[in-house]
Amino acid sequence: MQNYKILIRYDGTHYSGWQKQKNTLDTIQGRFERILSQLNGGDVEISGSGRTDAGVHAIGQVANFKLHKKLDKKYVFDYLNKYLPDDIAVTDIDYADDRFHARLNAKRKTYVYRMWIGEYSNVFEHRFLYTLRQLPDIEKMKTAANLLTGRHDFFGFSSVKKTKKSTVREIYKIVIKKNENEIKIIFEGNGFLYNMVRILAGTIYDCGIGKMTCDSIKTVFETGQREYAGETLPPCGLTLLKVEY
Amino acid sequence: MQNYKILIRYDGTHYSGWQKQKNTLDTIQGRFERILSQLNGGDVEISGSGRTDAGVHAIGQVANFKLHKKLDKKYVFDYLNKYLPDDIAVTDIDYADDRFHARLNAKRKTYVYRMWIGEYSNVFEHRFLYTLRQLPDIEKMKTAANLLTGRHDFFGFSSVKKTKKSTVREIYKIVIKKNENEIKIIFEGNGFLYNMVRILAGTIYDCGIGKMTCDSIKTVFETGQREYAGETLPPCGLTLLKVEY
Image 1 (cartoon, chains in turn yellow, red):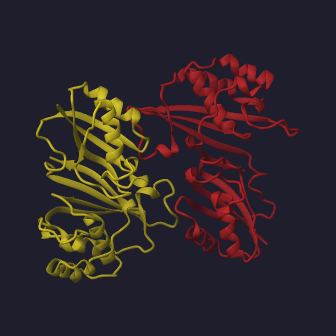
Image 2: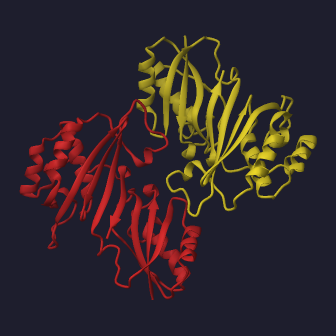
Image 3: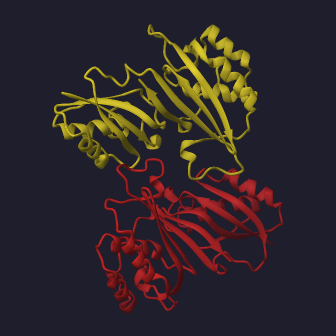
C-alpha cells in the first residue's frame, strides 16, 4: 500500500460539504472516493484535514489516501483532475509516510471569512462572500477578535452537542482587514469545532454592528452557553486557506 | 416621462439570457422589469443594448427605461440594487435624452471570450471560462482572427434564419491574448448577429487546433453556409464588456 497526500481546492457552493453522505456525488469526499476506487480497482477511503460544512470553500484543503500500488504521482494527479468536476481540483500531490493522516496530524489551520459591503453586490464573487447590509465598526471587531484569541474552551462558540471530548482549542491569531468594499477575518488556530469559525465570525460581526457587546464574549466563555454568542454566518463566506503539519 | 440609462453587470450562469420569456424571473430583462414596475407603479419596459444568450455574462451591458417621473438618480440606483439578486448589479445610472435607445443607438460593442487550459481546472472562475482539452496554436488563431476582421456578410457565422434584414457587420478588431493558463479573444465590432461571437470564437479555436483550415473561413463568406464554420462554443466563456454610443 502507498499513502498519498494531496492539496485540494473547491468551490463548495453546490456540495453538501466534505463528508460522505448517502448521495455520494453531493460531497467532496464522495467525489474523490469514486474516482480513486476506479483507479485502484477496489474501495479507497480518503481522509480530509477537516470536514468543511455544506457550501464552504477551500483553497488549501489537505487529504490523504492509500492505493494498492505506488503509481507515478503525476499519473494519479492527472487522473484525478481528469475525472473531477470543474469546481474541484487537485493542485499538488506527494507520496506520504505510511503513518501520515491528514486529520489526526494537522497542527494548524487557517480560514478566511470574507464579507462584502458596497453600493452594489459583487456579482462575480458573491458565491465566496457574505453580503452585508450594515457597515460594522472595524475597531470594535478588532476588540472582539482580541478577546477570542488564545486558549479557551470554545464549546459555547460551536454547534457541538455535549461531549466527553475536549472542546478546548487555541486560536493563535485573528486578523481583520478592510480593503475597499471587502472585509476579511482570518483565523489561525490549532483546530476548530463544528461551526466554530462561522460563529466566531458572527460574534465579531455582531460586536461590530453593536448587536452584542464584548462582555457577552466573556459570558460565553464562563457559561459555555451558545445563546450569548453571535449568529452563525452563512457558509458561502468561509474558505479553508491552509493546513499545516 | 423620464428616460434613464444604466450600466449593468451580471453572472449569467443561472439565467435564460437577457430577453424576457414566460417565466419572467429566469431572465435579466424580466428581473429588471418587475422591480421597475413596482417602483413606477405601472408597467415599465427596459431595452438592453443586445440580447445576451442564456449563460452569457456582462460587465458593461447598457439599458434604458422610462419612468413616469424624474426621480433622484441615486434613489433609483439604490432601489434597483436593493431588490436585484446578488448575481445582477447596476453599477452606474444617468438621465438620458428622450430619444436615447440602448439597442438602436449602440455604435460599437466589445465582447471577450475566455478559455482556460491548465493542469487542473480554474475552480473559482470556471463559470466564466470555457475549459479546453487541447492547447491551440496561438499563431494559427491570429491568422484566423485576421481573416474574420473587417466588413463582411456574417450570415454563415450566425444562427440567424433566412432574413431580409442585412447580416453585414463590421468587426473592427479581434485581439488574442494568452496569459499563463488563460486565452482571451476580444471582439470589437459595430454589432453581432445571433450566436455570432460564440461561432467566431469556435472558428478561431478550431483553426488553432487544426480541426479546420483558414480556407474554410473564405468558403463560409463565399457560400454563407454555417456548416463550414467552427463549432458554437459554450456560453459560459462569453462576457459582454462594453457598449459604446
